Length: 120
Image (tube, rainbow, N blue to C red):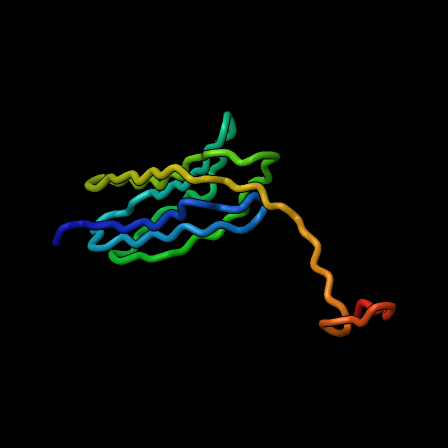
């Protein structure tokens, strides 16, 4: 069998939120070392380092996206290396700054002139 891998990386992640990357490795016959890194600007963060020994391995890795002050482009890289198998998947990701907002809900949908409402 041919060793194969599948990595899913989102194209947009939200600043300060939880991101997720999934990886599936199949038909492994030796241990492989997996590394997941996020780079944006001059900052490089290692999200995961793990040795995989199972012949078939699947995992979704959740990570905390760093807070940014403005929208920025980064790179997520999944790298695997072993004695007989090596791969790397890199993808640019947009780290979006989350804008806050206010939602106001009143006690009824329409008011007549002069009426006042309360906020529940």
